[in-house]
Length: 309
Ligand code: MLT
Ligand code: MN
Ligand code: ZN
Image (cartoon, rainbow, N blue to C red; front, side, top):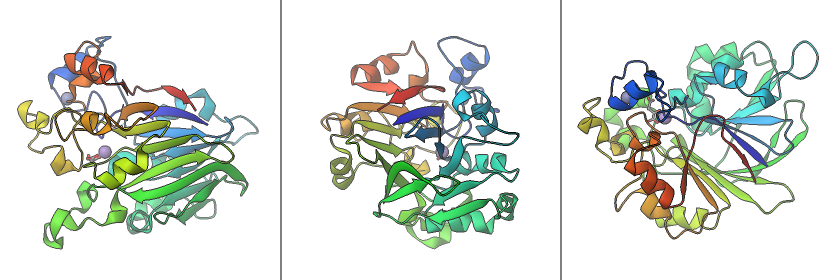
């Protein structure tokens, strides 16, 4: 099984178009210790030929251009991309679907809740239903991803709810706690390969680590995890926003309730932060926070990172 990190930043990317924080300034100035990162997406393949996007970011066109494995291989129209698996309906995770128009056969996998969001936004009808099939993913039900031609991919997925929040543009103050969030609004993926023992997880959005979740991922070979913020209040402290990480549905890396502490005893093979916000100091190669995360056994995801499992 092979994973490609197409985009390692959170929504907005790094640098973010309107952000003048010190991190973004350094990235914009081309500082080699503040490498630019595009928005949140991975690609996964069992055979190295047929690929599935794990979320489709607004930067997808450029991400494909930078990734030879995803270039057309045969004939006049072709793509190794067989489909996309969505973990929520955030803009940074569905905006790239609009790049996948042009009557190319594809399979789009999402929970019924997220499929409903796509259906209600007529812009997504640009994905011609004669070519693009949409499949509901039901929580806790294993299924094998199907290539666009109907053949089996060899990749097995299990979807499970994780603590999180409905997409920002769907927040409804009147809908009760957590803005009307339902369990299907944010899911994690377990990804395995038929006939092999290796287990990977993809959790780009996760607001906390209940015991049920830490027991689920314990001893996994690979976990890609929500790396949005280092501290919960960093956007306020840097005066670039008024929201905490928690308010956005993300747990921080540092602190007693942070992900670094939560993973400390989970015996995970490789743990990689992705979906990293532009305010997070781990983005800087020379920061003490980067050293702290790495000495705790974490890798900081970067665009074009390749992981073989
Ligand atoms: C998030 O991960 O919190 C969202 O992508 C925020 C957004 O939609 O900008
Ligand atoms: Mn996001
Ligand atoms: Zn910034």
